[in-house]
Image (cartoon, rainbow over all chains, first blue to last red):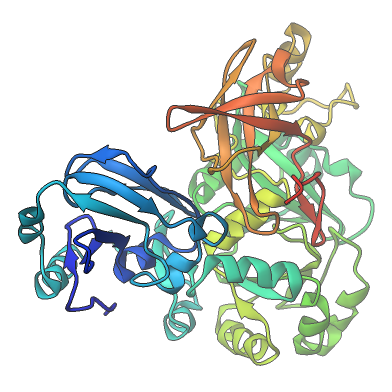
Length: 130
Length: 367
């Protein structure tokens, strides 16, 4: 069973969301997702300043096997993308919850985070999918 | 449907393989990291369970005449016992039923190795054509097949072979040596040196374990695909099929038309296609932007659209490469465009061989 930290929120499409002290949120893909994708070779992150709707495809990760869309977990404005991934996409495989984060965003409405799953609900979701 | 298992299935499970359905067989996709497995074959030695591929023995007084009619390449080119030939088996329309390797075992005996997905249909076709010849077509499903590939493959494999087959170290590429039970060929699907070994199923696990102990890593079908793509080798069902002629699959070199007296299935269609002018060609493409070419990626040319047949990130090169079937008029262009997620990115057109013996065969964009 892959790891899913307790302090994060999760989507059904296998993104994780962490609330930072300044009210922005960091988004990445879960350990389970990177395992399914296999070795990542390319990450196309959203541009800082772009507005995204909840559930909209806003980034792409490509593994040796396939391309996969990343969906915005909530509505908001992208504030920063992880530039490191341009040269080192393998960081997503090696450290999905930490160095392999994809982008940060300012939520349109902080309350939207409540609609996401906690770690237990996500674990159950992964279990149900497999 | 229950998936078929090779004699090495238990060994794959022990090694933590991610197992997937491949043509009705439960086969290892990877054992953890496709990328590392790929690199191990380029830099050291890796092994593949290819026991799902089918060995078919062909023998009888008219074996040569039968194969000269059945196959687009000409087995009369095989002058030395143990030599092998790569060939397509065509239908009357000139489409490819399968691609295979055929070995001459001396006298009136030959051995073919065909793809897993097409094996049943291939055998039915062979047996049907064989009715007009004094020849027997005999599937040999009892063999296990292990490919050991990489610059260190030969040295690591030789001491583990039966003693009477250790001369395999002297084998030229595309040649084989065998005894009553084992068959060792200097062939492969990676662009590296190595062997493909056929052996009795009961001995497969022991040989696999001995290779593991010698430092040969297991490699799954995922890396097998990126290795063969880099090596410029076609994949049946992806780069050609029953509706695609070898002339549009970069396999014209395997169609032997020299002997005008030799009729073979598909010859008339191929000659008509040649006379009319081949409409499409399969070229190599290197993506000059960020992204990954995939099968089905649209290629935009002045002469109309083309399509990527095989495409992937090339782990040995750090860029994405592929084969693209494009209008013949566009095949000599220096650059074309690939459409990836709505964006048009430049691709360089190259001879479709990207890596050989660990060395890049294309110019890489400077980092």
